[in-house]
Amino acid sequence: MTPSRRSFLLGTGATAAAAALVTPGSAAADNVAGAGRPDPEARRFTLAVIPDTQYMFDLDRGDSAPLKATLQYLVDHQRSENIVFVSHLGDLVENALQSEIDDISERFEVLDRRRVGYSVLAGNHDVPDSRTDDQRGRTPYLDRFGPQRFRRSPTFRGASPDGYNTFHVFRAAGRDWLVLALDWRMSARGFEWARSVFAKHPKLPVILTTHELAREGHDGVAQMSDYGRKLWDELIKDNDQVFLTLNGHFWPPARATLRNSAGNDVHVHITNYQDRYYGGGAMIRLYHFDLDRSTIDVRTLSPWLLGKKALNPLERKEIELTGPADRFSVPIDFERRFARFDPPVLPPAQPVRDVLVRGTVAYWRLGEGLKDLSGNGNDLVQTGTLTASDDHHRFAPSHRSLYFGKNGHLSTVDNAPLNAQTFERGYTIELFLKLPADFNHPWCGLFTKLAPGSAAGKTGDDPSEPIATLNVAGGGQLQWAVFPRNLPGISTNWGHEMDYETWWHIAVVNDGVHSTLYVDGSPLLRNPSTPARGISTAGDPWLVGAYAYDKVVEKSLHGWIGDMRIVNRPLDRSEFMRSKAARTAGTD
Image (tube, rainbow, N blue to C red; front, side, top):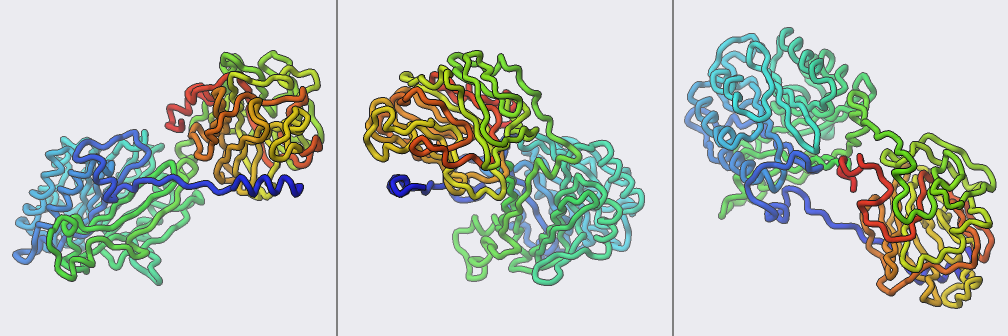
């Protein structure tokens, strides 16, 4: 980097601001909307988990008010927090008595009336003899919470012949998810039934719920109980669909990540608050799934206490728990995690004719050749070493790319019409880009004019800078710097740092007055308001995958470029060079 270029860059600044998000469950989210149905297509949704409520339903010593408040909260916030399903983890009551079961059964009617999808399962305190398994026969629990209860449920899909094991399917983020609600002690028949559910639904991700699976070990790390080890060995480890397990019974809460037979992670979580103030106060866990962020954000709170106007000293401490076992995030690349049993369907490559929108000046399918497929003669020539690759953005028109390993670049032929174009009425520059994990090669160019500004009569800023350059700064940050036709100096757009080992769609759109940078169809922040019309030219070539200073090629790209298109008008985002499947998947 020359001293003049360094001064120019320091003067423009290089820090981008992050967008603020409203977290589901926050006060801001609560004000968005009241009661209503959840959105089955939204890529952010919530699974609500209710652990052991037994002390609230204990002969004449309980109090059903906390659970009543919790269930009403879930109904009231079904839309604002996009609550798609509710799971109770067993030990609904303390003594398995008819009166206790009747009491809690009545509380759950609010979910039945609103047709909220939910599951329950029997814990050791819900059956008269905890030494029995799911072949125990009729009990007050089965009378009230057996399969007959869920005949109008929108999510109930079936039960084992004994009635103690059920499975449910809910719709969220545009796909189906399966919840297995298993008895606290399964028989051989129960295991056989559970395996049949997997066999009949081989492509659904599974959340397995049961009363006992893991217990707290050392330093908050969960470890399998004896029965949990049986579940793991006979049901979980060889069924890759299970990515999350939830159980109560033991306390304090803990979690662990285990590796299954396929080499994938299974997240094991213990949730139980019965030993806390007021029997846990019907404390709930909210699992906020965010598929765009590849994360599950977990919160623990008591709706009963949230709704009280006056709190005593102990209650004030229990409204929401924020320790590392109660409030945390779980990173999951959902698509990659589910790929073995439900591989994503990639859209087919698009015919060239479908990509040639009105005003297309040049279109290159890098990795397939250097010919301009628009038919306008803007062919490319190669300098140095480049490598064709099958790696590509899943929504790119073609399924190929070109790897630039710092030692080569492309340039338009000397007589290419593109070299002389000034784009007075606007332009769109698009490409697909991926940077490697070890990227440490800032200021390498993506699309750059060979000649400096001085060659086009420009005297402002640093006239040795190229007439136009789209390049990658440190941290994968984008920059579009151009000497426009109407200014003596440089107009600069700045992007933000982008993840490596990720394919991105990049676009620069100029409407004849202003330029805007886009990443994956999203407009970025730092776009200048000063009018910048057209692109100056000295009739010089464009470089693909390189940066030049004072007409000397200084740096080649370190990364991959896929399809690349230049259009002589501003494109609407709906016209961007992305397959129709991108819009179906909610990525635009």
